[in-house]
Length: 495
Image (spheres, rainbow, N blue to C red):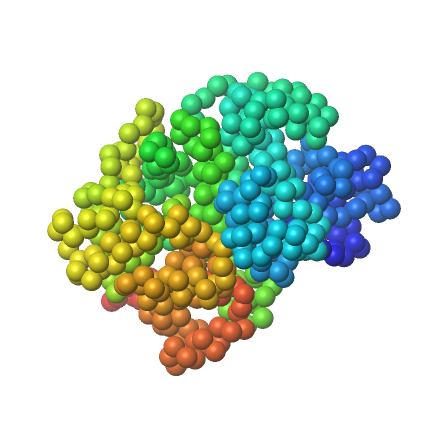
């Protein structure tokens, strides 16, 4: 991937936070690579080598800087390049679908040969798929060493190293010292793991909570005191996560889960849920070319597309939300949890909201939807049963691996899922930035107010210029519609 060397150096000199995560600087005189925001004195231009990814810098022989800590740089999606195949491959790697020894299956999931996949990675990222997997693992290990009191043996387990010996060897090879020397301060041992989740600013935390709060599933999710809580279940084990606004350019996650093996997956899901890999600079630069959207983006800088914790859970929630209000869909979801969910079982409930008391049912639990009175049309219950059967038989149903159009067509084959639901699922579950539920009533109403759209076709034609960020445009239009309704309600109350 070609980078403008002069532009990168200017960003380095100004420590421009907008470029954090967009490139890394290798310094030939020291053998270290840094983030653009590194507080160290900038090196001379002739000593700088610029890389699109941390893995490319490490593959070139550089080791991570201990001051700016590349492991906590925001992981942006913009540098994925123009190749959709590479972007889907990176999403699969991030989701844990590929390990060092499993790259042939990654290529199979993408429908290409392993050699071609390596060529694409080298062309667009300057490194190999294997190096990306290894870098992701070792940088996460470094964050756990520095920021937590987790024992080294547990960190080796949490980051996917086959043994403590391999873990120690990898850290020593990259950092030139054993893991224990990277843990500079003695942190108190805690049962709650606290981690920073970095993002590229700006980030509209209030808007994220405003979106999640009315959609919080009773018993499973709670939004209170500017904090998002939820119960989790992985491989039959229960736990709790809480996310709040941290200091600087990161969120703060508190994780209570007894199995260290699941830690990497928990962090990945939280990053997905809060859309922490978005590049607001690139998105805003593109969408503001439309004057009508430019006004909306100025009102809500850093607005993200909320993802999901679990694909099946959010797909069920989407089906329940068909042709009813958000409030009604949330009530229906609560009934589903009460009828088919399980009681939350954890050892440490200190400080946990009392309303958090259940875990969402798994696909096997919903095969018999219809046996309990849930207060919804029979057709919707049939759709839930069909979805549960498909999710049970296809573990990759809600994983990235095909194009947006292919994903939409596959989802629409599920009885009861139409274009709106499929687009919504693609938007929140599959992390498709160009998904666009154009038939949404609130979206149509907002488009009419913003630029005088006269129907579904008019909206689609205008939305063509928003590609490939239509999902972010939809979020701004939904937010504008919610603001308009709030203003109208206020005027009626005064009158």
